[in-house]
Length: 373
Image (cartoon, rainbow, N blue to C red):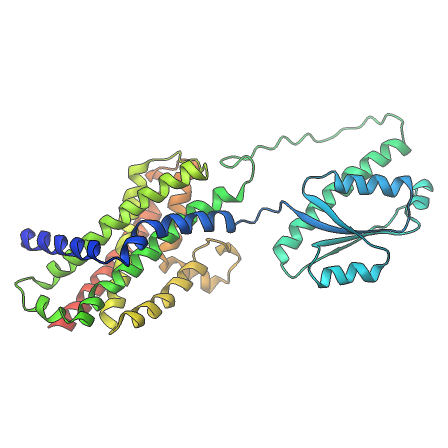
């Protein structure tokens, strides 16, 4: 291998990247803008539940229940209605997330020391959000029940109890941003490296310089190295930039080893650059390469555990996820970010990335050799 030829090819690629004005925003601004947008948008935290309320009791007990709901920061009573049909209409129109109906016999049943019913209607079109809203409502009602029971039965009751002292490690406030932002960092690295690499060779074909590269003294693997090394450097630079932004802007803790994270990124790039190179060899135009990218990006995203737990997927699909490099990289990046996990624990993921990366990259190189022969 002649490293001088590879070095000149790398220099030529950097010059071409710098001259292309369309690539400049993609290289610098696009990762930061996407991280900001996704970092704020991709979240499962429920912070504002709009509530419509129908009080048919109009008693001190019903007003106390209303105060208990409205006093919780998560709930916000936006509408007081006069009949059940209005509750249903507000839910259908998506003007509220939840509706509460306090019946006329609410207070009388409590005073008779009977069970009083309260109707809770929740918009279940988004099942995960509905489950969280129901659980929050249950907490408020349990607290209200405890207060009422203490007033109805003021005597002291001595009995054994369980004192559960719960500690949440790595994310004490259960902020979903701690989970999603490291995943967004991994997804952006995959997305940008795929897009840039898939355009590398097909761009040469479109402008008519591919034949010139073929007739040069460059060997096929030297040409591929010269094409991919610049994108490895660019991707690693983007990775460092996005990590710094995630730590400083979103206050995501980075408690693990940065060199270990960059090493994992290098192994991950073997797979993404190999796939991008394969796409570039089978595509004739940049538009075709762009469309082919989506064939890989969407399955990688869906089968990575970024949003949907892999344990909930069918067993056959769980086996397929082992072929997804993004899955292994997500485990590594979240472990290093939040837990400070080291190589002694993450070595299976590193091994998977190394095997997948080597197989994909070698396969792409072999196909490229056949195309230029």
